[in-house]
Image 1 (tube, rainbow, N blue to C red):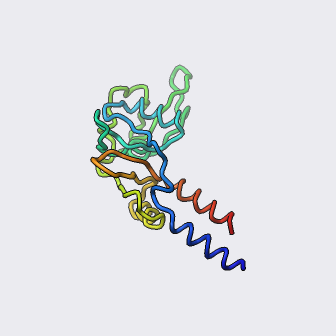
Image 2: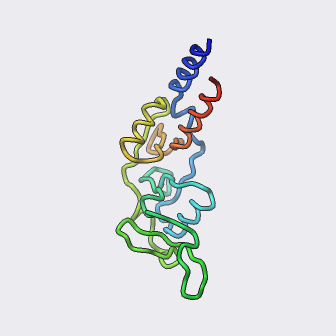
Image 3: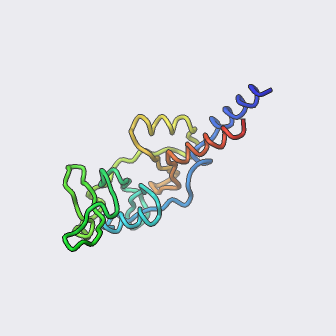
Length: 167
């Protein structure tokens, strides 16, 4: 009986789709937002990426912490005054104080061709896409380039955890 339960849980897990797992509504960020604002938004919202949209809500790309931050750490750098500051190491290796770059727009750092899926995309296919592209999220689209939702690697891991508890 136990083997049948495991097979059933595996089938249910593999039947999950983007529509089942996606976060809705998806938090988006405006293309004109500064790096400073995006870093604060990511930190306050406890997220590591979001679709970048134009004024009409059409997706232009995706910004993830790895696009503009190789390593971020609040208080990692102590200013000469002894004050803690938020800084990041840009992909080219330069240490940048977030406060020193308030006008540098995220459109200069975002990935312009994000990996996207339809709502019916199976969990296994999304997981493989993430592994192949070395990413942690896929955007879910339905129409006219407007993101419907987002599925993260954490969403997939949570689904696996739930399936494991039911066996």
